[in-house]
Length: 336
Ligand code: SAM
Ligand code: SF4
Picture 1 (cartoon, rainbow, N blue to C red):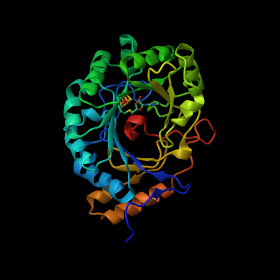
Picture 2 (tube, protein in one colour; picture 1 turned 45 degrees about the vertical axis):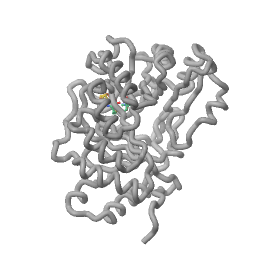
Picture 3 (cartoon, rainbow, N blue to C red; picture 1 turned 120 degrees about the vertical axis):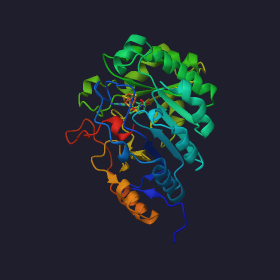
């Protein structure tokens, strides 16, 4: 028997250490770049992995393959009942345990999540204008989200990061406002390029605001340290490229999945709410782990499935190239 942990490597030599777990495909918001206003055909509750099943898969990734990071996501992870119970189970694995959330429930859930062992949260906010926030998400909850950020910080779930999906003609006029908010609030804003993962398949390249444009707009308002200095901070496996303000008031990040894809240093795999393993956000194929989990598969059986799925991982997503095919599932069904 080989000694653990083993490197979970793909055919391009990329070693995987980061697991994204979607705990539900359901959500209380309807962000226009993610799901339609009428919602989605939700997965039946019996088909969603139980906390014990999630714990078993996560334990395998951590113990056998040395995974160091787990992020819970969805859908909206905080709408899953008793989420702190799962957090408690995963916290025992001793990894960097984080959560991506729309923040709307954090004012009431942050304390329990932190007490259960959650370490950090990323909160998504696409507009600081209440009416526009409601227009984008179809729910008038910006005040609750801002209160949620305060609650997360008070609970020790920091450093809190704020994710903003930038869309041309929708919210790109708020790039500088959002950067200013981050500076004033002491949170790191991460601007995300709009990706073709909306369930409506309405994405067009014209709606993408590039990393270059985002950085130029922020830098024009708040001078940055030399780009080469910012580059030195770039953690190889971290999708966000980080920049620092020249006046020392923190920094911001850009996730340039479209214009400067980071597939060559990708170290993550994803588990969907119903137990499908995805080796890429844009993968067109998935490996079912729920069936084997429910029919008595051993850890070695599961490991063989995981290793085969990762071995078959492709080089990259090819957005913008003629060969690109948008996955049929949207972001909320995959787990962003
Ligand atoms: N509901 C939680 C939230 O909104 O933070 C977690 C799930 S959400 C699918 C995870 C992240 O994906 C969010 O930051 C969201 O803004 C981002 N996202 C969703 N659809 C996207 C798209 N088409 N392009 C880029 N980012 C997207
Ligand atoms: Fe829900 Fe998050 Fe998708 Fe918005 S981005 S609809 S909050 S899952």
